[in-house]
Image 1 (cartoon, rainbow, N blue to C red):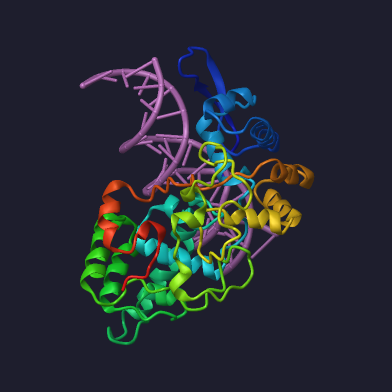
Image 2 (cartoon, rainbow, N blue to C red):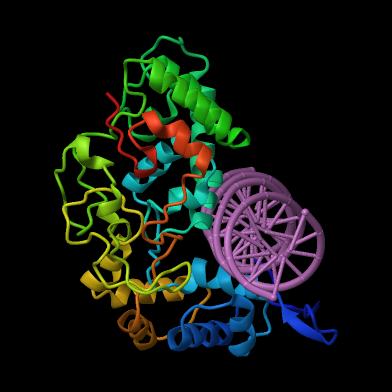
Length: 334
DNA sequence: AACTTACTCAACCGCTGGAAG
DNA sequence: GCTTCCAGCGGTTGAGTAAGT
């Protein structure tokens, strides 16, 4: 990690040089930022940095908040289900980490990106090395997702080909996506089959759900609250929302575009989780403070802003028109 | 025990796009 | 239309740590 050594920085619009710290955040800095966010909510990050008495740039504060201090963050290792979902989403979205993160509540784009670049990529690479010597027709052992999913899926060869392209982070999205789409549209087979039938994971309520495969990814705008006009207030990127507004009460078994993280905090009343998290990353905060945060407000992470699901950039909207509204990941392409 | 290598992940950097003036 | 500011994103870096020799 980077040393928390202060360096000289320059305040824009002000010729006075001020010391802007870089590197790791100290517990004191975290506390300042957390307290400020609790009290004032999100605003202009450079103002936050200044007003909170932090000798950090706004950008750094934003990052710290998003990746570590946010109360709705989930910590700990990725579950197999999350891994599965990441692989699946990456095959569709490419390196759009923020989009992937938006479907993994409590996870940050940075976290997912790191996870992908270390664990998954390596795993896939290793497996490719092994399987490359085997017959190309030998089942689906060469399919990365099959690898990841323990052979649950039996994708078409064409899909495998495209997927292998997508696995390469250098080929992020548009070409990849178009290849995907070409297959999607020209192939009678669904290139994005449901992950598997028993969606006993990613259930909003954290309990096992036997939601059918068909509904697994059926994420409509209504499901995520904001699309139906459900979000309350705004905390900028992490809108203040009414707890459980985001479809938590529904039977949504989908990796909602955020929202489920509330469950992590509220349903579990999760002192231990919070403590663990706060301890994990460099330290800090006693449990009471953490809980207070949860009580005071709930930040929606990962840029889900209600109706404004941005996966789509316009081109995507058009491209995906025939793919069962991919932005909401309804994979029922039939 | 000492050293080296591999891995993880927090944080930084540079870029893009949107909003405001 | 141009400039400036800001938020957000993806790629990259590098310190800390675990695993291996």
